[in-house]
Image (cartoon, rainbow, N blue to C red; front, side, top):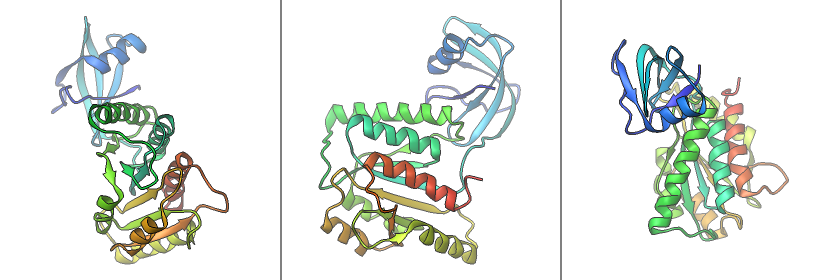
Length: 261
């Protein structure tokens, strides 16, 4: 069955056998692109973790009537919640991070501004870029059969983000040329701590990825001096591009914590 995320204007199913009328992106994708017809079954997702099996009962000019046959929890979501704070990069590079990290399993994105950030966005240009990024995330979530659409937050400065460190169970700093620990070692200890504490809530991990020029020494000092469980980690002996580090670290975290099995 093909999956479709409901957009913000689409009605949400509330009960079985309910018929909802859809238009806009869902109609265009289902009817015009994929050539669905009356009697076909599709899966609708509300973007927050619920999935609805529906039958197309009527197709009209620009609208699609679907009857709800079943409701269930959508799959495809790791238990660990990864929040990726990615320093702004050139347009195509940043979009690649959003797309690939969404496919891999990141939960939330912070577009991060730092001292060495070369991209500057403000006003209508910034709003336009955020809307484009939301579409990229949405499509990547649909294509990879995620159960939710990862959240894209507003532009955040490193100073603002540091103040939020205590809200995470672990903060990982990917910084070249600083005193680091192997990622596997840090995550193994983290996993053991989670088991010992028997925490009921899903763990929240914040990942910090610097810009092309890296975090400055003073920024690294501020990060390491902040309150919270902050750990600088090594990604190996090679220096990675900023658009490579974020998706790679997201995947490695999920692998090490048993979310890729």
